[in-house]
Length: 294
Length: 152
Ligand code: FES
Ligand code: FES
Image 1 (cartoon, rainbow over the protein chains, first blue to last red):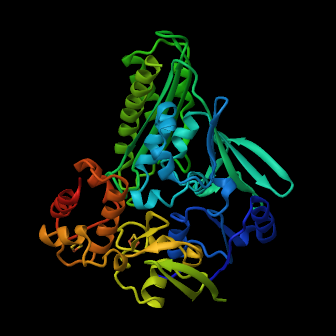
Image 2 (image 1 turned 90 degrees about the vertical axis):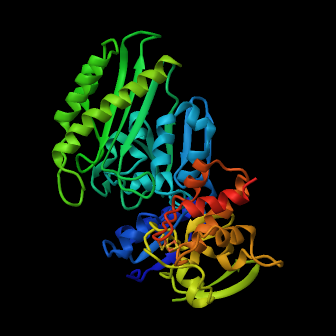
Image 3 (image 1 turned 90 degrees about the horizontal axis):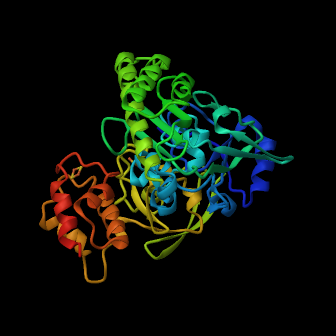
């Protein structure tokens, strides 16, 4: 199948891109890495009149760590995150998500911003960003705003971003001492796969060997968007980390999951629920192990 | 409306008029006649359309031809040197890593990118390096052998 007809624009700056999205509104689609957009266009799910290509905008490709904050420009490729030793050292769960995305050929094109904005419930990047408490900088001609990634996804493929806005940067705070995170995705093969399920967990301890003072658990593919498991988080906070506690958190995640078991999702609802528990327990154990070493 | 782009392919400069919705793989095949690059799935899954774009291997079915404006591309036709086939290509023949050949251009380009960056990859790294290229014939082992045989 061939692509629909559209006009192509390649703005040189973020300001120019903002003016374009403001002018075209819903008639335009932004091309970041293109790995989701090209598929959607080819399968006739969308046919924009205008395609605004932004991977050439330098400002959107900055990747820096400064004063306790990792800043990822929206057009930083997933491959760059995989290769970054600095990110691996402090934000290991984010790296794990990046490694799990597509194949190396896809990762060389796909962008971190694109994987967030596409808002696919099986996406590999959002869970860990949510677990680390990231925020997103959205820009339009009249200024910019910062939103928590927790409030960003409103449905499959839809977000809180206005048609006149573009995502410019992702801000990921450095995890405090005695904290850790883990990401696990479940697919059929390692490369080129769509997840059946993915979970990311983060915990922070009150000093070495202390109680859990902060917890974030995020699951994907069990609802129209990635979701936080508030019930499991509540049950963890204030408690000493133990295997039994993690099992109970897993049970809470199982009960909170509302997967649809369709042919498309390639796994039954029962299977997904059981696995959500398993992956929650596993990622909590990973998070705990990291927290003890830091 | 067509747009005129300038692109360097295998060290040759071209000026091509492309439609905005034309993919890079189609431009290479239909406008430049470089049919070594294959169009398999068209969706970024198979790697048959692999080209090296500004030093990075990518699926050219996911790139718009207009986006190649001002950039440099290596296709399989550009891998061969003055003295004939590239050592990797020879190794593919010697190890029986080619059957129908549809995946071969993409495989060779992915392997070449890997070796350019990491001349002595482990088997794991070789597997990872060609993980975006599907082969429905060989079962991959001969391909891995071929890449290994030219690694340092
Ligand atoms: S044709 Fe491009 S990845 Fe299959
Ligand atoms: S040789 Fe036939 S697909 Fe690889």
